[in-house]
Length: 296
Image 1 (tube, rainbow, N blue to C red):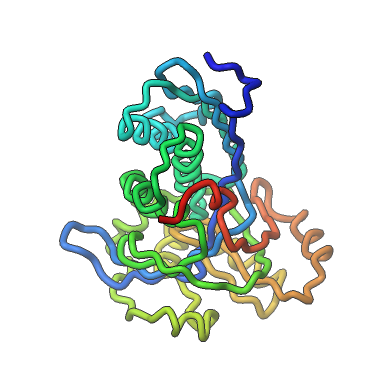
Image 2: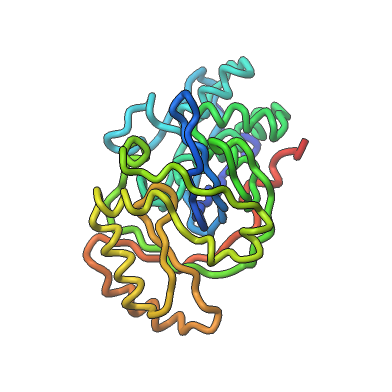
């Protein structure tokens, strides 16, 4: 096993969550995959990923998530995928401190997988470019290429068409009502809206709030009443706000007025229903791991 004190074999990275500022479903392919449009905003709610290279030829998860088998663990799958793709004969110990709730529509698992690919590409000195890593990431999940892309983006198709956009740096209130929703359950629902009229990038940027809607939200509220409860909580705490669900749920968010009394809001968050998680977060312009790889 490699010397854990050797800093060349160690890397600790932050894996950021994202918000879907809007999510429209504009169609469906013949293979069943849904065609989407969305604006992805990186936020400073992060998991902490530690990678430690070892001589043993194995992928070792130090602190596995209870109830998640290795073959379903995205960081293990990402490490194994890269290892096999490049024929690496050594291994890695992976420690993941989860802060982003699971099943929350915040992209935590996809971000962790992307950060694993980026971190091991650096530690193993593979020098794979962003395009190659993104293609590998797409095998793990539709949102993984976005986190490898590493900047805020207008995303289309099944998640593979990524266009950089510049967003105002602002704060958000995000609430997770302590109940996750399986993405598959949302997208398999017969009542899901699948014919939203497409919008353009310029149209979104010209009027972000008028385009802020999530076609998954109605289905999510029906199968998970806590989503509506969280939306109602924000409306009551912040009258005049326009809360929206992120991704396939169950987290909801709203943009905060820069003049808002943050201390007062933090006080209100102390009275969330038991088990709920509420955070005031700031938008990021880049994934913290962005500079670890080449852009070509």
